[in-house]
Image (tube, rainbow over all chains, first blue to last red; front, side):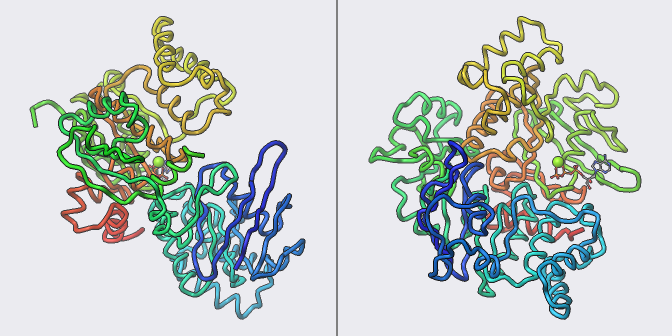
Length: 296
Length: 246
Ligand SMILES: Nc1ncnc2c1ncn2[C@@H]1O[C@H](COP(=O)(O)OP(=O)(O)OP(=O)(O)O)[C@@H](O)[C@H]1O
Ligand SMILES: [Mg+2]
C-alpha cells in the first residue's frame, strides 16, 4: 500500500533516517522495531508530511505522493508517540471532539463511537475524565479517536511504550482485529517480543534498516544458531569460563539456570562449555536484533 | 529449608489510601539468595508493596519482617539490610556519573575512603570516558547501571528494584540481568518488579499481583506446567482474566 524508496532525513549532523526503503503491505501488520533514535518516528512523520524528507520518494498505491501529503492523510489515521487527549474532557467527549475535527457525519459518529467503546472495553468508563484513566486506557482512547474516521491505513508510533503487559496484550488483540477487517497497520515498538507478532518486521538502528522480513524469513536467513545449554556444575562458574574464552565471550548470556549461546562459525559451543544438556532453539527476534546491531 | 528466617517475610499486608484499598492482604516470602520477579498490570500494587517492605510507606495492617526483624519495630536495623532502587529514581542529569557517585556516597554517610573504593570499583566496569560524561548524555542502559550502582553502594544483602529495565534497550537489558545474576552469586537476595514478561524466565520465582491481591506465585516453569500454559504471557493474561478484571 505504501512504499518508501531510499528515504533520507538529516537533522544537522544527525542522519535520523538514512536511505530507508520498505514496503507496507495492505491488510497486514508492519512493525518497525528498534531502540530510541532508530528513526521510527521520523519515518512516520515524513509519511504524513509533518517532517519534510531530504530525498527519496513515498509511493501510495503505486503513485508518487510528491508534496501532496493530503493524499496520505485522507486515508490514514496517525497516532503520534505523544498523543494528545483532553484530560479535562470525558472519554466520550474526547471521541466527539475528534470526530468533529475529522468531520465524521453525525449518524456515523454515533454508531462508530458505540462500537469502539464496546470493542476497547471502555464502555463502563465513557463518562470518566481522560486525565483519570490508566496509561493503558488512555492508549485505547487515543486509538479510538483515530479510528473514528475509518482510516484504511493506521499509523501508530510506539502505541505500547511504557504500558503494562496486560494493556499491551489487549491493545495488540485490537490491532489484529483491525487487520482481519482488511486494514493496513504500521506501528513502531521498542519491544522485540511484541514485534515478533508482526507480518512484516523491520529492524532499525540509527536511521538504517538492519534487516526486514517476516519472522520466519528472518529466522531462515539468520546466519547463526542459538543453543540453550544446561552447564555442568555451577552456572556462574561456567559464565566466568565463557567470559575468559575469546571464542565465546559476548555471545553467551545467562537465562535462569541455563546459558543461551550463539554459534556463529562451525565451532560448537557445547565443546567448550562442560554441560549436562544442550538444545538448539529458535533464535528470538531479540537475539537477531542484538546480533545484527553488533555487526552494524 | 533450614530454620533461618526468610530474607523477607510478608504477612497479610494491607494498604489503604483513604477508602481505596491498594494492597489487600498479601502474604509471601523471599528466601535468602533467590531472585523473585514481581509482575502485574499498572496499579496492581507492586510499588506500594515494595515501599511498605522498605519502611518508606506506613503499613495499614499486616507485618513485614526482614531477616526476622519487624520493619515497624526495628526500622533502622531492618533498613540497613536493604537496598532499594525506586521506579522514579534518577541520577542528577547535569552531574557526571562520578560526581553522582560521590554525591550519593556522601548522603549515604560513606567515609571518603569508602567513596574512593566505590569509584575504583565502577571503573572496572565502565570506561573512564563514560564516567566523566554528564548523566544526561549517557545511553539509558548504562545510565541505569550507574543508578543501580549508586543505590547499592552501602552493600546491602537484600535488594529491591522497582522496574529497573523499563526504557532500557535489548542488549543493555541482558547485560543488566547479568549484573543481577552477579549479585546473586555474591549471595544477595533480589526482588525485582518488571513489565517485561520475558524477564520472568530470569527469576527463581515470580509473584503476580493484580488489584492489590497476589494471584499467582511460584517457579516460572512449575507454574506453566501446573496450569498448562504455553508461556508467561498466556499465564499472566489468564491469571488476570480468571481473577476478574476491575
Ligand atoms: N499516595 C497514594 N494515594 C492514593 N492512591 C495511591 C497512592 N499511591 C498509590 N496509589 C494507588 O494504589 C494503587 C497501586 O499503585 P502502585 O503504584 O503500587 O501500583 P504498581 O503495581 O506499582 O503499578 P505500576 O505498574 O504502574 O508501577 C493504584 O491504584 C494507585 O493509584
Ligand atoms: Mg510501580
